[in-house]
Image 1 (tube, rainbow, N blue to C red):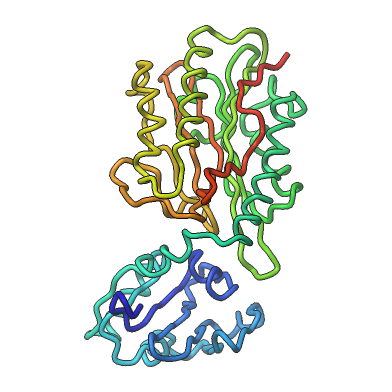
Image 2: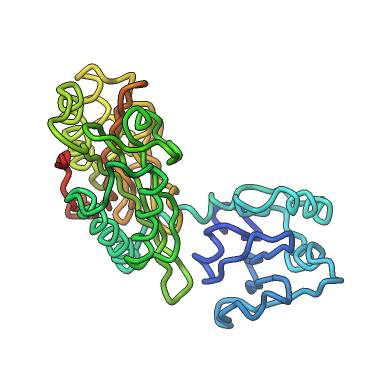
Length: 356
């Protein structure tokens, strides 16, 4: 805050709040705000009826509950004082910001992520181990998927998605963040919503799933994994050829994810192999995204991000190839940039699983 000239940091709903104080605010019409003056003490302002949910940390922040007839915006503005530069949580409701600008007409507002993201995106050893535990949990589910222990043929995509979600919780996650199940031509849509299509014999199924494991400190860390299976018989030749390209592209990007390498160069390592094989126009998204207390956060592994990877950065490596009307495929691991080289947290088999 000192370096960036920020007088006060304000964090409301979103992942910054639990990361810094261990309390996750409910997304209510009643405002919650952690007010952190650069030269003062932090105060968590929240509805009085929510105060019982807070684990108090008096060495870090005080708690100020507001009553139903009080004006919480005025309370927050008073705590901020004559702040000229205010960093506001990126996910705070716009309505609250509008109200704050009226109470603080002499303040200039900017995104809090300029302050919080550089801190959050460098994981310490404990954070890496929490990410590793979440990754191991979804690896175990993927192993069952690849072995045929999770029924596919004859099930709808929605049924398989529900089963993946059930197992995510059973494996120790507190929340299911997503469970994409895309079969046959539906897999050509990277974020396909699992529906009532019945999975057939002799086709591809893409499964991308993950959740959040919340620790005793109230902070959750995420998992995210994608694997592909062929339901029965010998896969189509064009699918096998594309999968071989995808497999090598993903491995090349993992190898490139070393400390000091610009994030965009990791994207290029995967993309160039896919382009050289003639599938460039079918790789329609970035190679990866950061992961931690959010499923998607900095650093983003994408062309244009020239920021060098730092030790402790955690991110996905997930190139894909999507042929409209035919099939799609994506292969994803979570990787940590470490001083001794890339550290893949997901280790479940990367080869195409052929069932039956």
